[in-house]
Length: 281
Image (cartoon, rainbow, N blue to C red; front, side, top):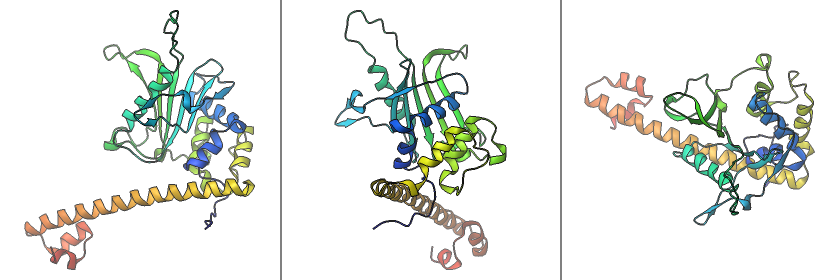
């Protein structure tokens, strides 16, 4: 049954939405613009080529699958992923996946001198790193191999970039750079009903055209609906787990407070449990 999708523009946090905007040959100019904005002038990518996944390694019976895998005109490799769910070993997975584009450059010939091209792993994260690892205002992280004594970059050809999207809260009036504008689009696209005046660059004209659900073919519409359902199912499962964990913690705390002789009314105030629930403990 078709879903009642009321949004005008697609949600880039869905698998379909992210790949629609950044993973197709027709829209590679959007990806180029996003990458150049991300590197803030340190890179000037003029063209990219999408690379086939089958070129990457296999571990066990599983193959590494990325949202986007491409290289620029200089041979630098880029892994770009939208990661919706926090994983216990997300950093491990990210580093592990980055080894495949490195190994892919290996030459079996005797004359290969191990001269590697740059590898960039870019994670657009719809979650915040655990344990308050970074401050609430720090959402852009660029990680390289560093000499711990000198604090200087030891190897500049391997870079990990992570964007903690929930921390990006700039309003339209606060957008200054192309980086700001791209993060604003990713954060808010599905909530917009018209193109913001701050996004007047030509690349955003195309983005909003490509993101408009009404322009989709019936097949694209079905694909997007399936992707939205999967996205919502994941979010619902996460929210349910959080609520259950919080409820369990409240019950445990209430039980301890009761055993310590705290008045029932105060226990209810601090835990949110009803008087009846507390008395039943």
